Image (cartoon, rainbow, N blue to C red; front, side):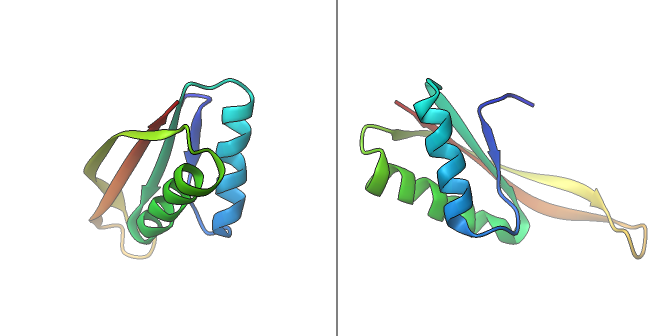
Length: 90
């Protein structure tokens, strides 16, 4: 995994915004925001807060959507989980 990637999970949105802004301040030209399943909406929120509020010179370069197969812990079956990656650039 690249060093300019923010993985979205269960923490509050502003934690991920701060991580993205830190990457920008450290000189990253491209930031990738990755999320799966229910966290996708939080990833969209993070991207919008970064581009509209804090770093207006950053724009959305592209969005990749995908479906990943994840093995269930309880049943052992393979489940399809949606995933999304948002690419932000200066």
